[in-house]
Length: 187
Image (cartoon, rainbow, N blue to C red):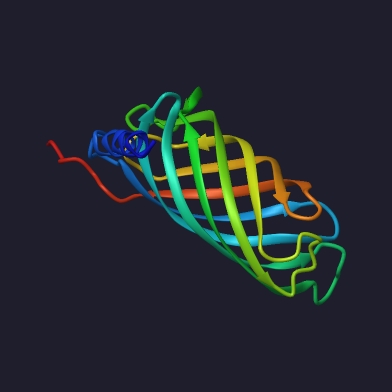
Protein backbone atom coordinates (compact mmCIF):
# COMPACT_ATOMS: atom_id res chain seq x y z
CA UNK A 1 0.00 0.00 0.00
CA UNK A 2 2.83 2.44 0.84
CA UNK A 3 4.49 1.71 -2.52
CA UNK A 4 1.26 2.68 -4.34
CA UNK A 5 1.08 5.97 -2.45
CA UNK A 6 4.71 6.69 -3.27
CA UNK A 7 4.19 5.92 -6.97
CA UNK A 8 1.01 8.03 -7.10
CA UNK A 9 2.78 11.00 -5.50
CA UNK A 10 5.72 10.63 -7.90
CA UNK A 11 3.34 10.63 -10.88
CA UNK A 12 1.70 13.84 -9.63
CA UNK A 13 5.11 15.50 -9.18
CA UNK A 14 6.20 14.34 -12.67
CA UNK A 15 3.02 15.79 -14.22
CA UNK A 16 3.57 19.14 -12.50
CA UNK A 17 7.27 19.33 -13.42
CA UNK A 18 6.68 18.36 -17.06
CA UNK A 19 4.59 21.44 -17.87
CA UNK A 20 6.19 24.07 -20.04
CA UNK A 21 7.89 26.98 -18.27
CA UNK A 22 5.94 29.80 -19.91
CA UNK A 23 3.21 30.90 -17.54
CA UNK A 24 2.97 27.61 -15.71
CA UNK A 25 2.59 29.40 -12.36
CA UNK A 26 0.23 32.16 -11.29
CA UNK A 27 -0.42 34.23 -8.19
CA UNK A 28 -4.15 34.41 -7.59
CA UNK A 29 -6.10 37.18 -5.89
CA UNK A 30 -9.83 37.38 -5.47
CA UNK A 31 -13.06 37.74 -3.55
CA UNK A 32 -15.13 34.77 -2.40
CA UNK A 33 -18.53 34.98 -0.76
CA UNK A 34 -21.55 32.86 -0.04
CA UNK A 35 -24.87 34.22 -1.31
CA UNK A 36 -28.27 34.55 0.32
CA UNK A 37 -29.98 36.17 3.27
CA UNK A 38 -28.86 36.02 6.87
CA UNK A 39 -25.27 35.39 7.88
CA UNK A 40 -22.82 34.80 5.04
CA UNK A 41 -19.07 34.33 4.70
CA UNK A 42 -17.17 36.99 2.71
CA UNK A 43 -13.41 36.59 2.34
CA UNK A 44 -10.46 37.77 0.33
CA UNK A 45 -8.44 35.00 -1.27
CA UNK A 46 -4.81 34.73 -2.30
CA UNK A 47 -2.97 31.71 -3.56
CA UNK A 48 -0.51 29.99 -5.84
CA UNK A 49 -1.71 28.17 -8.95
CA UNK A 50 0.38 25.79 -11.03
CA UNK A 51 -0.42 24.35 -14.45
CA UNK A 52 -0.88 20.58 -14.67
CA UNK A 53 -1.98 18.19 -17.41
CA UNK A 54 -3.78 15.32 -15.71
CA UNK A 55 -6.77 14.16 -17.74
CA UNK A 56 -9.13 17.12 -18.16
CA UNK A 57 -7.51 19.06 -15.29
CA UNK A 58 -5.29 21.99 -16.22
CA UNK A 59 -4.43 23.74 -12.95
CA UNK A 60 -4.00 23.11 -9.25
CA UNK A 61 -4.32 25.96 -6.73
CA UNK A 62 -3.52 26.19 -3.03
CA UNK A 63 -4.56 29.30 -1.20
CA UNK A 64 -5.72 31.08 1.93
CA UNK A 65 -8.90 32.98 2.67
CA UNK A 66 -9.33 35.76 5.24
CA UNK A 67 -12.49 37.71 5.99
CA UNK A 68 -15.53 37.95 8.23
CA UNK A 69 -19.13 36.92 8.71
CA UNK A 70 -21.59 39.40 7.18
CA UNK A 71 -25.27 39.75 8.12
CA UNK A 72 -26.93 40.48 4.78
CA UNK A 73 -30.09 41.68 6.55
CA UNK A 74 -28.36 44.38 8.61
CA UNK A 75 -28.21 47.98 7.43
CA UNK A 76 -25.52 49.04 9.92
CA UNK A 77 -23.07 46.90 11.88
CA UNK A 78 -23.49 43.69 9.93
CA UNK A 79 -20.03 42.21 10.48
CA UNK A 80 -19.18 39.72 13.17
CA UNK A 81 -16.02 37.87 13.99
CA UNK A 82 -13.19 36.75 11.79
CA UNK A 83 -12.94 33.77 9.47
CA UNK A 84 -9.86 32.24 7.90
CA UNK A 85 -9.27 29.13 5.90
CA UNK A 86 -7.23 27.15 3.45
CA UNK A 87 -8.37 26.01 0.01
CA UNK A 88 -7.21 23.40 -2.50
CA UNK A 89 -8.81 23.55 -5.94
CA UNK A 90 -8.38 22.16 -9.41
CA UNK A 91 -9.77 23.41 -12.69
CA UNK A 92 -10.48 21.99 -16.12
CA UNK A 93 -9.27 23.54 -19.34
CA UNK A 94 -11.28 26.30 -20.98
CA UNK A 95 -14.01 25.38 -23.46
CA UNK A 96 -13.59 28.32 -25.83
CA UNK A 97 -16.64 30.44 -26.68
CA UNK A 98 -14.94 33.31 -28.53
CA UNK A 99 -11.82 35.42 -28.82
CA UNK A 100 -12.11 39.03 -27.66
CA UNK A 101 -9.73 41.93 -28.13
CA UNK A 102 -7.65 43.00 -31.11
CA UNK A 103 -6.36 40.67 -33.81
CA UNK A 104 -2.73 40.74 -32.71
CA UNK A 105 -3.41 40.02 -29.05
CA UNK A 106 -6.72 38.18 -28.61
CA UNK A 107 -7.96 36.94 -25.25
CA UNK A 108 -9.96 33.74 -24.98
CA UNK A 109 -13.45 33.84 -23.51
CA UNK A 110 -14.62 30.47 -22.30
CA UNK A 111 -16.21 28.19 -19.76
CA UNK A 112 -14.52 25.88 -17.27
CA UNK A 113 -15.25 23.90 -14.12
CA UNK A 114 -13.54 24.38 -10.75
CA UNK A 115 -13.69 21.79 -7.97
CA UNK A 116 -12.46 22.89 -4.56
CA UNK A 117 -12.28 21.80 -0.95
CA UNK A 118 -11.74 24.25 1.89
CA UNK A 119 -11.32 24.20 5.63
CA UNK A 120 -12.40 27.18 7.75
CA UNK A 121 -12.08 28.37 11.32
CA UNK A 122 -13.62 31.50 12.77
CA UNK A 123 -14.26 33.52 15.88
CA UNK A 124 -17.82 34.37 16.97
CA UNK A 125 -19.26 32.19 14.21
CA UNK A 126 -23.01 32.74 13.72
CA UNK A 127 -23.25 29.73 11.40
CA UNK A 128 -24.94 26.56 12.70
CA UNK A 129 -21.82 24.52 11.81
CA UNK A 130 -19.83 26.39 14.45
CA UNK A 131 -16.08 26.48 14.05
CA UNK A 132 -14.12 24.82 12.45
CA UNK A 133 -15.93 23.43 9.41
CA UNK A 134 -15.13 22.13 5.93
CA UNK A 135 -16.65 22.88 2.54
CA UNK A 136 -16.65 21.35 -0.94
CA UNK A 137 -17.69 23.21 -4.10
CA UNK A 138 -18.38 22.52 -7.76
CA UNK A 139 -18.17 25.85 -9.58
CA UNK A 140 -18.88 26.38 -13.28
CA UNK A 141 -17.11 29.53 -14.42
CA UNK A 142 -16.59 32.13 -17.08
CA UNK A 143 -12.92 32.86 -17.80
CA UNK A 144 -11.30 35.65 -19.84
CA UNK A 145 -7.65 35.69 -20.86
CA UNK A 146 -5.14 33.17 -21.93
CA UNK A 147 -1.61 32.65 -23.04
CA UNK A 148 0.96 34.19 -20.74
CA UNK A 149 -1.02 37.23 -19.58
CA UNK A 150 -3.41 38.24 -16.86
CA UNK A 151 -6.54 36.09 -16.60
CA UNK A 152 -9.89 36.81 -14.97
CA UNK A 153 -12.48 34.37 -13.71
CA UNK A 154 -16.02 34.52 -12.38
CA UNK A 155 -17.36 31.30 -10.85
CA UNK A 156 -20.67 30.58 -9.17
CA UNK A 157 -22.14 27.33 -7.92
CA UNK A 158 -23.13 25.24 -4.93
CA UNK A 159 -20.93 24.76 -1.90
CA UNK A 160 -21.62 22.26 0.86
CA UNK A 161 -20.69 23.25 4.43
CA UNK A 162 -20.00 20.04 6.34
CA UNK A 163 -20.80 20.10 10.02
CA UNK A 164 -23.77 19.70 12.28
CA UNK A 165 -25.97 20.42 10.35
CA UNK A 166 -24.67 20.09 6.80
CA UNK A 167 -25.75 23.09 4.73
CA UNK A 168 -25.77 23.89 0.99
CA UNK A 169 -25.21 27.51 -0.08
CA UNK A 170 -24.41 29.35 -3.28
CA UNK A 171 -20.81 30.55 -3.65
CA UNK A 172 -19.57 33.39 -5.87
CA UNK A 173 -15.90 34.07 -6.57
CA UNK A 174 -14.12 36.68 -8.67
CA UNK A 175 -10.48 35.77 -9.29
CA UNK A 176 -7.49 37.42 -10.93
CA UNK A 177 -4.55 35.28 -12.03
CA UNK A 178 -1.18 37.02 -12.44
CA UNK A 179 1.60 35.10 -14.27
CA UNK A 180 4.77 34.41 -12.29
CA UNK A 181 6.94 32.76 -14.96
CA UNK A 182 7.46 33.68 -18.58
CA UNK A 183 9.27 31.95 -21.39
CA UNK A 184 12.16 33.54 -23.27
CA UNK A 185 11.26 36.58 -25.32
CA UNK A 186 11.99 36.09 -29.02
CA UNK A 187 12.29 39.31 -31.06
